[in-house]
Every structure is written in structure tokens, then in C-alpha cells.
Image (tube, rainbow, N blue to C red; front, side, top):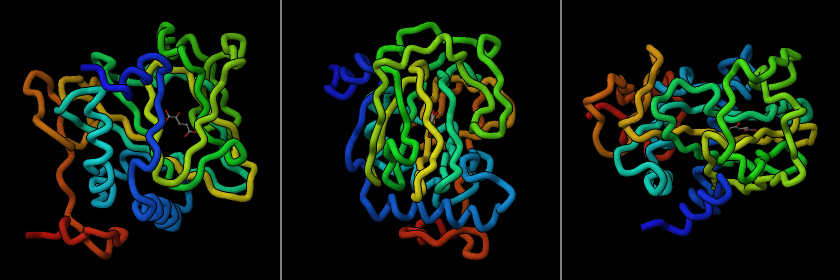
Length: 261
Ligand SMILES: O=C(O)CCC(=O)C(=O)O
């Protein structure tokens, strides 16, 4: 049976779920970004990627949150892994933009069965550079990386994007979210975001969830199994469950569940 959420997602290529997680968890997520920023002063907070996060107990706790996985399960079934996490946290005044792109152009997944959850840790608005989508473009062909342009201006997160001549943004939708809301988007929908020139942080966490039957065609990737069973027919190797260590990790509610038994 198709749920109303799936129906909306199929029609538009995205859907918003308000209050998907509570405000306290959204606040902890924002605190995590500031905690990481202090420890990684050389890395822009738009680029706190999976390798930095995959050994972190708070990240495992967050991506396995039943409320998020219940949403994802509607799109990809009940054997679920979170393949790639990425904070795109735009600091006030000089947060980078994200050029128009389709996620699937970048991804080594076979088949391209994947759903993104974008979690707002702060308010995400037009003023501070919220995610923007072009509804319906999930039905377009997936462009290859070779068909896109490189833009190495140091002002955008991906360093590449779809050529502006291929973009009709007359029906753009700004996904304005409050802390704890999520948007869900299709790997083929064209999307991006503007720079943050406002006085406030815009902190989002983008999470790529796959059915465990999707094969990851890149060595070294370590998805996190969040529900159900791995699929023996592919060689995906899962991240180990991390152990909470107060000297290495940010404190969070529920950290005791991550301590040695
Ligand atoms: O956070 C943004 O501004 C862009 C996010 C994005 O491109 C994605 O989640 O796929």
C-alpha cells in the first residue's frame, strides 16, 4: 500500500515531515557541529563528512533514531543502512552555497535505490540559505559527472554543478524548516542552496539511507546498519558500533547506552 507520504514524494520528488525529532535532539545536533568545529579548526563546517562522523557514538545514536528510520522505511523497506552522513553547516555571513545538482551523479551505488533525509538542527530559511528543490526533476535523466561543470571558486560546497543553461528555476521551492523538521529527497531531484549571508547559523545534517540490498561500489565506505539484516549478496562492510569515551566524544543524552557492558 502506498502511504500519503510516498505518494507526495513520488509526485514532487521531495516531502517535508515537521517535528520529525524533538527540539532537544535538534539542539544536541547543533551542539555537535560546534563541538566538531572546535576540534577541527582547519575544516569548513559545510564539510564535516562521513569519515569524521562514522566512529562517533552520537552520530550512530542519531542516524538510528527510530523516528527517522520509520520515515525512511516507507521509501526503501525494512532492511536499512545509513551509507553517508554529512553536516552542511553554514556559518553566519560567509556560509557556502551548493550549486544545482542531482545527488545520484556523484554516487557509487548499484542500483540507485537511496533516500536522503535532511535534518534541520537550526531553523533553515531563505535568509540563511535553506535547501531549494526543482519539483518534478526527479523524473529527469541522471546527468553524469562529465556532463556537469567544475566551479573551483572556493565559494561552493561541492566544487561542481549543473550548467546554469540547463536549469529552469521558475518553479523553485524553498524548503524552509524549523529545528527538528526533516525533508526527504529523491537522488535525481535537482536541488541546491544559496550562500548564508545572514547573522545566523544554518545547520543541516544530510543522511543517505539505502536498502541493504544496494551495493556500494567503493572500497573503504562504512555504512551504519540501522534496521533489519545485511544482504549477503553484496560485499558492503558495516561500521562497528562505537564505544563512548568522554575524552574523545561529545556528551549526549543516552550516552550510557554506548558504554561498555
Ligand atoms: O544542505 C544543503 O544546502 C544542500 C544539501 C544537499 O545537496 C543534499 O542534501 O543533497
